[in-house]
Length: 342
Image (cartoon, rainbow, N blue to C red; front, side, top):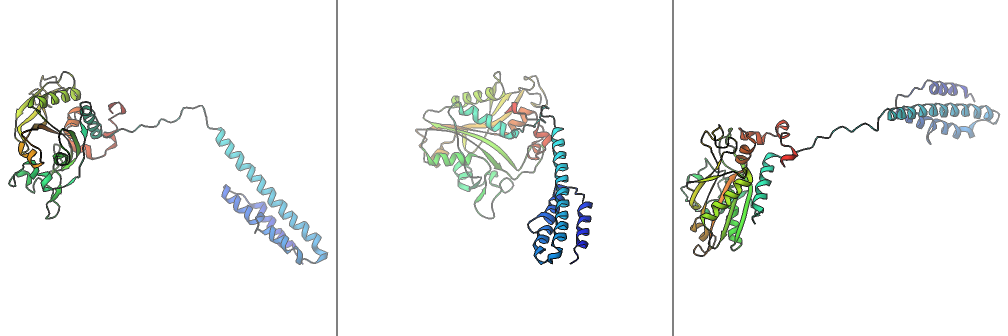
């Protein structure tokens, strides 16, 4: 039996082997030294070798085995040394790379601040569905069927049904008045929808916070004092307010609330258009008809309601002149609101 030919081929392959990675070295080990490798097979074939050739055959197989083991050990050492060298080049005393902290969205910052302000005087958060029916969104709020707010130009209706995307969070107030007796003291933050052309000052979806207080002997003076408290907590202790007559179907008396311009200190600026006042919300005493719709006795109970756009407050606080920026998720814009503002 001539075993010298394979012996030379194997030695030539082993001696010329130059692995470029740990994976290639492992493949080499499996090929020659693995349980199903070449050397294992050569030893298994030993029993078929004639007796007079066993000594020579064994010496050749051992030579192949020793060459493979030597090559494997050589490159295992080199790879280990390379890893150690790479690790030793790392300065463990060097400061870590800074990790950029995230920040809350400006809408969330203002929403949380509003909730916190009213929480201090006993208001609790109430939430409701964004897909509403006509009763809770319009009818119970004393909105006549021919009111412009019902027009398709303002409201997103779902197919031809009476279901719609809520146009305000006042619908949550109706649900709360239906589900619990007075006293009721709630704020209702949430997302609302209106069929409006998107521009720098308007959007088809935005966020509101509305408030409702129902109890015995609630007066317009209570409303005024509550809103003065809010204005000073949100815009500064020197803030003043004024109330201008307005109209909303669900309140009587109704008013628009202005706050003294905190940007120019009422000296006149582009934000307040030179008037020294900035409109921030609508408000009023809850119409007795709304109380009756919710089975609350208007002869015993009275209350007030108010509502503001969160985007409106955020644009004033941060002097942002385009509402669309809140919805674009531009990281350059969002990074301006540091954790200090939160």
